[in-house]
Image 1 (tube, rainbow, N blue to C red):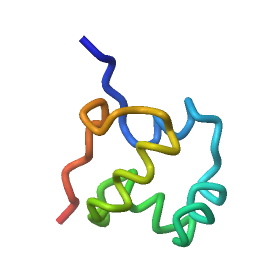
Image 2: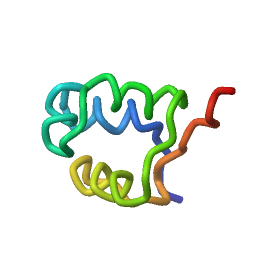
Image 3: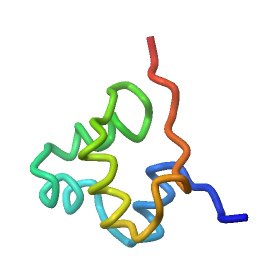
Image 4: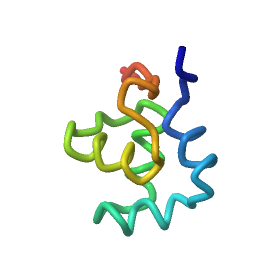
Length: 68
């Protein structure tokens, strides 16, 4: 069984900052933070891009439930 990670855990394991991730995907660091804590939904394309950057498969990521 593959390990499961949150977006934040995967980013930390990849040794990347919010600023680095935001720059790589063309988004503000605050947007990446909102994805990580579930305050904003992430698009499928951005999700796949993050997984590639973090070197994890999409099924290894546990996405947070969007806050209401």
